Length: 626
Image (cartoon, rainbow, N blue to C red):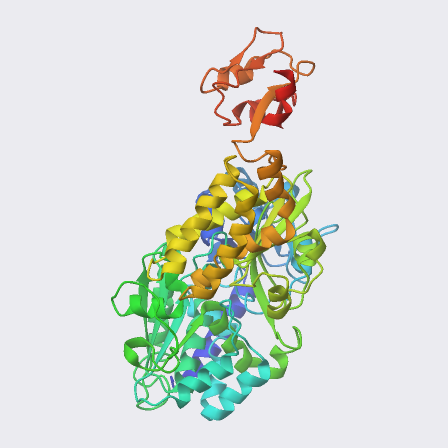
């Protein structure tokens, strides 16, 4: 550990204080992946140009994801003597108006989102009082959207590596005891107690041990780990260093998928900065006790999120799982004892040593302590990144924080745990989100993905979509997963295409249980979860498909048809002009008709009709009129 830590921290605090109270206006903009996808880099360029035009000497700071992804690009303006204002959905025009505000013109109220300092603006809430942020407890995400992740001084000023300083004063047993009292469980999905895993590794025979950070976040719609790496990489590095100190490892690896280029870029910068200050290097854990971290880019295989498949990939082999035991904590990377934890787990470690186990355990339930980050996505009004105490209900997250279902649609279901998770109906929204409660309901927490669905979602087709994902991502090593998931997919495709039977429903259940019992790794043992939970809670939709030949959600193309309401159609010809197969006939100002024989069910007619004249119906409903 650097002998100049106190000096480095003092310099960092002085720089942070100058940033917070200096005469030069500070403009921060969220340029994580979510911000960039919303145009944050273009907004930043427009801000620079507009500031230069006004002759303003501003300091521009790029930060990570603050959380309200629906409001990106987010820009915060801090200037002496004025309230600190957070602006949302800032486009190029908004950037010019913000620059004009800095130059003395009036506040652009259209873009004002919240204030973040002690000063207030009438009728504008504090950031943490806005609907999405109000129910959150930001601990792991405390620095995301606040600091420049490429400037280690920002991290030091906010407490980075102080947990490591304290951990260095404790014995290995004291460190493990601290983790045990905190109740921290692995945030990668299994929820295994962290202290037990580290204890197994510490006690395993062998002089060479390794620490591995699993950043292979492959769940569709999940971005918790990516956002943390992009917004606060030093929190993860600190946790890895404490892990190395606790188990006696000298090397660590971060396994991060190549699809996360910005996370990889910011990790590279953070590692170099940590090396320069001595947090990594030959004396990182004390005189003559080295610790280094290297990054391995994964090729995007979902199965490499499984520990043993990840190890195989790190060793240069094909990413395929192996039977356990032995577990990686006893025989992992190159046959040596290895601790593998995900990004959020490791980022929590530094917090515990910075503040104490008791502080960390203030939130959560008896068996699930602390807070948890979630990616709230799907048909929800306010999608984004949230952090709440474990035990918070799904209803609170979806309706209080997320604002409920977007538009005029009704809530139907929520999937937790990504492609390996299950789907829960509305009457399950009041169960607490913790490991045991979700498992009892038939689903899992996983790494933290939450997908919200409204009444337009067909649950049979939803299960088919995730089985298709599982089939593509299966490594093929074991028969139950390789062949079983493929057969599940074929049955689901038959049902969604009007070729299923009542017997298929029973076969789905039987086959799902056999796959779970016989598969080698977590991909196969959890892949049937979407099928089993949709059968458990939405069985009527399966029955409707195979017995009544209808799709209740009007989503499966082979069951539906489009018809034009003759009374509502004005003959505007818009739908006829857009139809790719010229399947709509009619004269201007007269009601049109759809030729079902050529209709491809693309939905262009329905989406383009401003008079709500094009209706989606089940084909069987048209039969009496034929």
